[in-house]
Length: 159
Image (tube, rainbow, N blue to C red):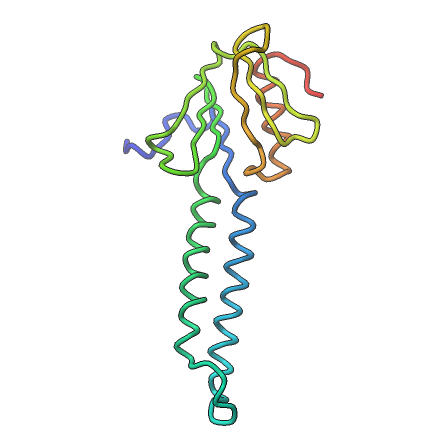
């Protein structure tokens, strides 16, 4: 078994940053269109010498490729993983070294905002200590599943 394989994948729920990736996919497509248009209009430079050279299309094309790679990374890699041990939270930068595990035993209660944009994990009954996680990077249709999974694991009613 390699380090990237999950031992029991049926016992975890993985939530990616696919909601966040949508913007980068759209920007990548727009820049690809700009690059294509610049390259296509360069054929008419003999008629209108003010048109840019076809080589200028490489700049938006390179930016399009970079944004597509970022969007693919956001779509594939996890933001939150619910495991039997707890909730693993992966930051945007350096996720392997900055990962945070919140064990189920540490969580006293949890709240999900009515608009499903914020998850609050309380560590004590007084709700003075805890973790607040934004759910905006997760696709909106997956936020409901996350709320049910976390609240169901803690034995709280889902509202």
